[in-house]
Image (cartoon, rainbow, N blue to C red; front, side, top):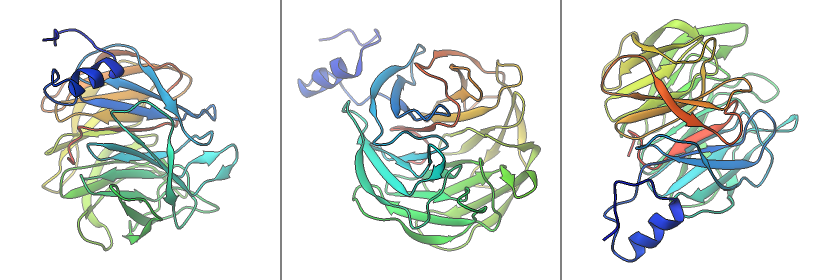
Length: 305
């Protein structure tokens, strides 16, 4: 039997699982694209700490893409390819290293959108095309095909944060037309329809990475601040703690049901992690291969699964 206490690479874990020696899939976080118009996908094991490892490539160079996932697939939707809004949806199999494959298209090309999912549906909402958008589109993650209309978010943010429980998808903050906002909205993922008011962040937010367990959502807002809400309720956010980086807000975030891992905006390649069920300041997790600004992050173990 293998020694499970060590940090294994993804190929080693896949081989062990195929041989019946690995009890369950590990919790992986994937970060795709960044503000340097990169097509790199990199991954981490959320349960440990350490630097990211190369996974493969997106089909296009991409920044400000959004990402969602099931337990088996990671999906990236939209983004900005050089200077043009993209409608491309692409996916990978999370436990299989390699390049992304075409999934379908968004109805509206967009970048700086925010996405979330449960185990069956992925939702991409808001963002910017030639104007600010408030529409939400959805796909069935286990299939391939074009996204279809879900409803409207009823505010039009770019660079909001979004995450989900098994039943609800939340969008928080962002830059809405003229200013950063504190708005939080939610939808019921299994239905279609317009979003409903949830409450507010206490701090205006932009470039908000977000992580969630099945009960709690944590948003990295402007500056170093982390705030959280209880997903099944409604109401305003509460202070959680701070990130380690001075003046850095979360850009991409991936989570298990226990931990949230945030990448930083700007040229930094730093990652921080928190324990979602507690409150307190973040700790250093490790470094990305390349900076985490404007990337799309997802995992096979987040709170929506």
